[in-house]
Length: 481
Image (cartoon, rainbow, N blue to C red; front, top):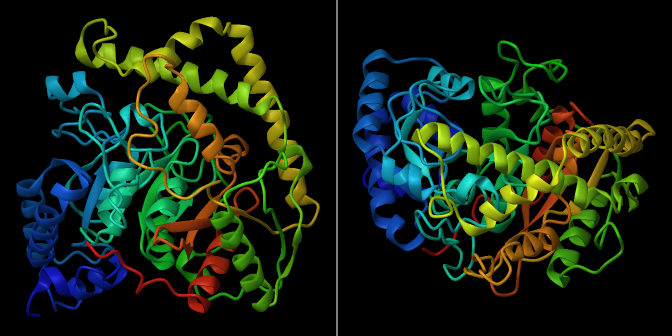
């Protein structure tokens, strides 16, 4: 290869791994190529906030010396700056106090250990909003991450740094997590594939609970990357309390398995009937027509139970309590009580909101979520295979729209709630959902569509996503940055 940084920029992780495995390129060369791209591109988009370049170089040298045969050996990779404890490395959770304290993790999370076993080459951490609380990535600690397609707009959040890094071609795949849409939102905004797995599909141990809203995996440029990474890291950890049913075969086998004729419902508006942005209507209608052309039965339909007027307040009860827990954990990590100087206004206000929530309120929210979960999932049990929605109610938001507002501390959450009208429901129900990059606005911004499967049925989502990718490929759609 000549200019490896340019020649490998838009290759997916599967292809890059094959280059290393076949000894066409050294892992060290791939790492240097990624570092070159990061140094060139990051000043404009601020995707990477904590670089580990020398650590990554050592990992790449080890791959070159030992020739491991794992599917992703030698692939440049980035970890989100949230939850992913990596022994000996700095993590800030998007928080200015942890940033200033240069907090160092003392152990690995279960998923990080599994990533390490794949011999991925870690080059650093990607920017995240503080505690992952918003669907944009503009933490006061590190500044805004910008969309590679147009730097005046957000790449989404909370995995916005990950999405911007992959969309700009810094790395082919990056870790991401999703507690209310935080994989699917940035995938939609940035023109990527983002799979939120079923609750309990991938362990979030040792310190987080599968019974909560969040799951983890990645964003990538191809469906096959997501399938292969899921094969590599899925499964329970020690003491997990929710364990998704095991797949019948490797997920990569689903890439070439025809899904058959599926029964697909879709929506053209919010679940309550309120209108959404015309570009998102176009995106979902075009996707519906594409699915019909592929032989599927498609009609306007969705689970009636999903339009629950109590869902928002119930989600807020759980989310604000999680925020109070995050605030408490920061105190423990810092070894002191935190103050309003340590935490962003919106997150402090959210944590304070939890003081209005009693133990009974929280228990009722958990119980009601279980009732909601069963009622929504019944739609799939009744014979539907897939729900098709826009991923978001509007194209990417402009940078600054969701900034902290002293006059209305909860303002960013209100904006988020309207924009994210199709994602958080499936964190509550625990179902898998994937965002695919099937539409571009007239002014060149990506708009994703979401496919939601029955609980535990990532296999069908991967079959269908691969079929769609073959029929309407997006690999050649890249930002001009």
